[in-house]
Image 1 (cartoon, rainbow, N blue to C red):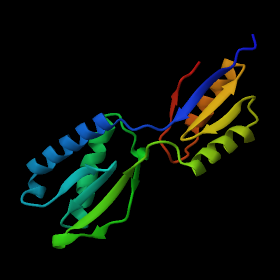
Image 2 (image 1 turned 60 degrees about the vertical axis):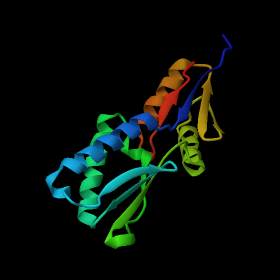
Image 3 (image 1 turned 120 degrees about the horizontal axis):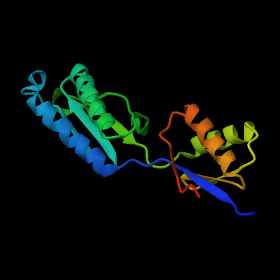
Length: 163
């Protein structure tokens, strides 16, 4: 019974669901009374969301609509990394929202350190933008998954390839 069991910690965003949420957001913005005649828009460009509106209030309202649609579509809000609001052309404001794809190296090191500090009998290893955790005991892997779900690392994490 020397077989190794493992699982991967990954961070993926489903772009099809994201596109559906963006389409629903655009439709709602075009129909809402407080956005009538405004230049408010949200678009996906090079794996980043670009939100534009006349003022910060409309930008915030548009962001609330987008977040509601994303949650309904099963996309975690932790996968969004908001940039600062900056002035844009034509008297509008713009905000760039980066979409997390893969676990950043500093966060991966933090996750591995957390696993090692808790003295689980597992071997975590960083493999590019994923973390592989291996052990001989499946119950220990289940404990690690439960502990990782309980702690907030500020990133969206999924657990794949549980074998």
